[in-house]
Image 1 (tube, rainbow, N blue to C red):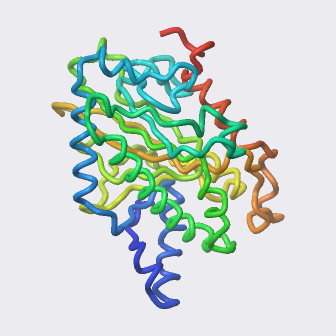
Image 2: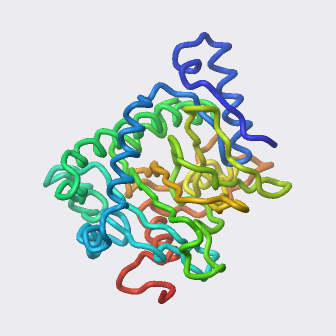
Length: 322
């Protein structure tokens, strides 16, 4: 099975036949956990975001370290090299990250109940003027893209197209900028940029990466993810697998530097998370005699907490002592 390319605007503006073709393409492609999406996001803005982020990751280490947020478990602010570790791995990934989300006002029930998911973002305005405003605006634009894609998936499952939108509008959506340094700087040959894993969330959007490296696990092995020019990559997460009773699998992937590949790699991904109190229960259309109920229920917040520990981000009790 190959990863297909679909046109988001054809779903939104096309006739019934065009819409159905997009739905069919997305559902077929998501058997791999991945789909490429043509969109209308500003390429100029994406260029600007990547330029500013490269400035940030080029700062001296002591300046980057000032943006670490104690107790956030990698959900906001800066996370340094060799910390996050894939759940199936014992060796940390060779990457550093900057994470941010949209804040909610004081008194909002989600901020009160989940303060480390909805608190004020920690962004490097002290070193790069205006960066916070740019990154928050970019965050909102990518959230809108993910909601638009979620409508296609909902229709493909026989649901109202707003089904996922209702839980994502105030969801704990997380944007993560990742810097993968050149592999000749890695401590040893055990490390890769990001070991094999599946994301925990509903869906993930990757508007662009600056270099090759993302690979997708399919039935016959690993294939390179190569979207069309200016197309976004969308992949599925473990929460969507639960919602669909396994009909849509999570997209397993890794990020590796190819033979002879030189230089750094930058990417910005956004994880679309339902509100943490959302119950991850399979929707009725996915439970049939041929596909009986596979998963017990769990809240989205509890599912994330479990994975945060598995990937070594719990500061007060890491799974592995690196």
